Image (cartoon, rainbow, N blue to C red; front, side, top):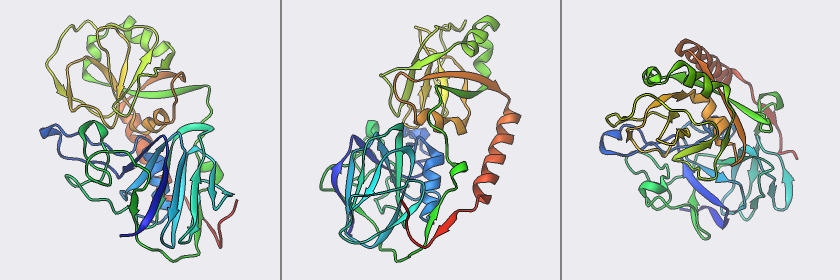
Length: 319
């Protein structure tokens, strides 16, 4: 099948759909987009299903050549986007013709962009998903968990439309906050942290370590020590904040291991994983505790806003 040819693969570009669910019992993690919100908007701008496979582009440097007439959209990090050397905007869909070149520069704010194509990327499924998990060697174009390489072809179907959609400016995320505030839902092992240690964690500022990836973000800052010295390994949810022996927190993300035995104070609220996804090493963050009820209410409101937000309709792509 024809589609989009990879001329330059960029720093680290991965095929991601909504994720691989239902296989933790055999040790397979979910994968999927770190910034799920930007991923969903990219698909909606191309009128795709929420779970359609897109590209997750770390930092930038990607160049594609279209072999078909289709439509694309780029969301997430602020990355210069050009079609045939003409600068165009992110957070809107653009008509692309066979022979056109799509070039992404390098991020000026945030670090992960999502490129969707009409109908989604038709990558083969492994355990029901095309999500690329490099650590497990699963998913992607060749079912081997590899990032994109020059010469790869992203299989896509042609799309003929002159309708281009854009997300209103006030609905787009802000990526330049000096300190990112992250909400946390406390877990049942919270009881293993004294009140003073809990207060220390929530009153301290942490920096994102360079030793961070899609498996987990390591933080550096004030050490927090739980009273629990050892525990049986257990299943790990997305966003779990665990504390190894050195007391420096680790936030477990989409490519996390499925079980682990470090104490966990709680989990990052799912909507705030998208904020984490856009942080580069050295960025500062702080945490605040919220209740399960507050988390449910925020999720419900977010979903209502996503579904009810009207997209602007343009007759043609605009800069």
